[in-house]
Length: 398
Image (cartoon, rainbow, N blue to C red; front, side, top):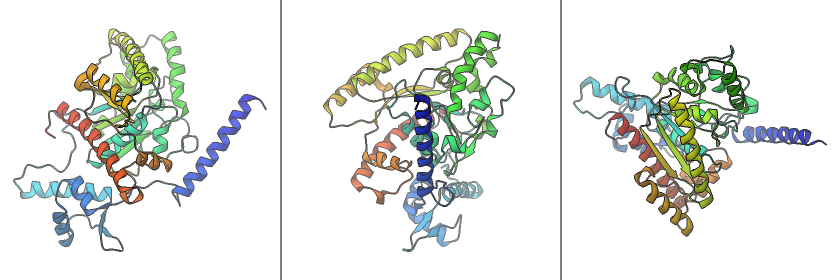
């Protein structure tokens, strides 16, 4: 059998098995759902006491929670967001308190935050970081859009999509940034997810077409600044920015036209780095190349103004001496541009990934509790630090 036929056969076989696995994991419609939250978890998400939620439920105020076989009150994320809206409405009706339960940005003075998660090297935890960040922002009540710019579509898989089965032509952001007459509005491509308040622009292999068609367009067209490749992602995102507080971009692990377009659209950038010497050396080359290419974009008229640029240490093992040394080396070089909190390497996150889930989607009861708590603590520290940077950029107190 020829190599191309063998590879095609393997791809077909693997795709079928992944489809079978999804149908076993998420019956009967093969769709993912997010677990419900206990009253304590819901209260922490909203910013009130558990006793206050109990009183609301007893009085029949706000959404009515479900109860399990043990009589515990359970809230869906939709319930949590409905409670935020209800409490904000009550506050406007007569309370003098200034606390806000709805986290949406003020469009008059707070711009939509576009956060690009990027690295030159695969395996740095980029997609895992993107998924957890997007879900964290949704849990906190921000209107969030996640965009999968990677043709490998790992982010889409985490959100329950099998690209070769669930998507057809023009179902990715490529449909909104392509150069021909088949371009369509990004709003028509966006899909709702099982996370209330979190939408997704999925990815698949058609994203690679942008890397092929852009050089042809550059060679044959005298495009205006608005039509240049580095403006197209920004233009597509701008068309839906009014609907969101934050847009999170999962960039490909390469410095191509899609990544450059994402960086030009970004208001902030997070570079993930695994604390190994080879990864750090690779990141050095990535930074050199990025700087050179972005300077060309700037000279061509592109704007490059980031609210913040930060480095996130990922898959960190505190007991690993060499990793600790590399982390110290990075902090010595970049100072506070390295996030204070590293993302720990955790079996809890790996185990959740076996069923294409994140740590936010699975309950504590499914893991060794100490392992789960350690991973969740690290995850919360990273995500809340990024949230604070966003709030600072808005001029809003956390």
